Image (cartoon, rainbow, N blue to C red; front, top):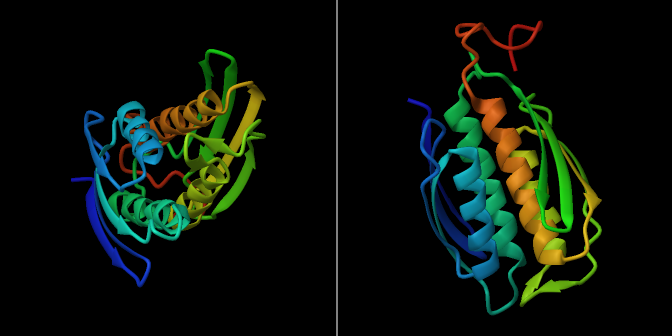
Length: 195
């Protein structure tokens, strides 16, 4: 069973997350940050990874610790659920169009975290949400999920559309990468013999 649960408690946040890589994209996300909840909902829905996420964070300061720490916990849960990564496709990529926005994502579940994030937002806020936190989330997810992750905006005028297209593009690339490869069901997808 490719499932995992993570709990993480610091002076800034208290988080519990559960993932099922072989789910149907169900989600139950409550972090206190409305726009971010909407984005994690998209991550689950379009990756077909079931995600349950709860976070009590220091929102009286700002949303930064909540968003970043949720990325850390989700990355850790993905790593745990993937185990030795035997039989997965490993790589995924997707171009996603959403109205004015076109975002490309490519990723490698290599165990070597690296983030390239080219998302020039035209505004600093989406409602009350700081657009710079989109990158912070993906940095934490990449680092703690051991993911080489590239995200590039090709077109975009509206910050909400750009952010949502980015989350959906990453979701679809992740869906492809975690899927079992029917031609290599028992193999580690690396010439090294491990990831």
